[in-house]
Image (cartoon, rainbow, N blue to C red; front, side, top):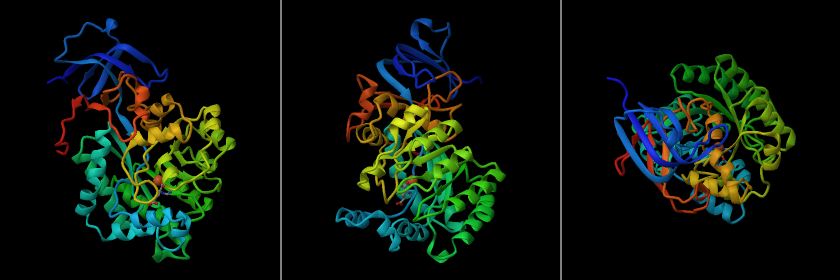
Length: 408
Ligand code: NIG
Ligand code: FE
């Protein structure tokens, strides 16, 4: 049987394509799970669709892409958050054996099923906002078995929910206590034992490293990147969040998919990222929750032509929550992105940050038929509402999602 042909008509389209076209009397067709044609309705080719959906003049965007999450975790760090409210810093808590390591303890104790059950509501919340693709990192296991457990849960979520999941191995998130004083041994294990093993199991779409004084050095990051390159696994980096160790420049040299955070980056970093085609992923929810004051170099990124993405950073420490729309709001208000930049940041540029720029993140022929129909008068409303979700319908692979029973 040939794939079902659907016509979606009477829509306003924010295509997020290379020209960021907006079509006020738009229509598109999908065949199977892909978009076949997009344009003004008056130019619609003569087709006989199997189904026609009249979208009533509503705005449509590509399905949103959350390109940086630590969505799989157990427990919370609300106690640490309360301490930070009283003035203790994130670094101080980390150095005293809390921070990421507290989540590591919780994840090691959790069964695979518990991890799935705790993470599923966060994923459902993101999908409810129109997220059709997201990245999920490991990084709270920090043993081969526990990192594998996290990545399996991430894959399982991707099968159970109507969403595309890309997994990232972030074993180089922080040094686990059993390796204290043996950072080099740990990086060797991750680079030469865990990465090849987990990649062979099909659990790794990319490798990430937290390059920071409380985590891993530039030289250690480079050793991990070299091992990833030898295996053909793309790399990403948590870089320049709390200080500038030169992470972005290294990541650019390795053609990283993305460099994320970047508060301490400047013009040289912006130019290097642009030159390498590395996306700059801004994480304003972490900036907000850590009460950070130094902003990422948005003007320099813009001037260099770097692809700027925006993500939720969903994690129990620096960004508790699961809202990409809130991240858009914060990216505009706190970082000075325009509404258009924020939208591209969660579509086209977020796709680039995951290496998916040829299949997702815009409404164009050949792309995945993942899109969102919104109850808004203009797409500027997407980064405008706070704590209010104007989603009307989410469509994934040309299938309309039905609430509340999202899981299959
Ligand atoms: O992206 N910076 C490192 N990783 C996370 C925080 C993880 C945590 O605190 O649990 C981030 O902000
Ligand atoms: Fe992160």
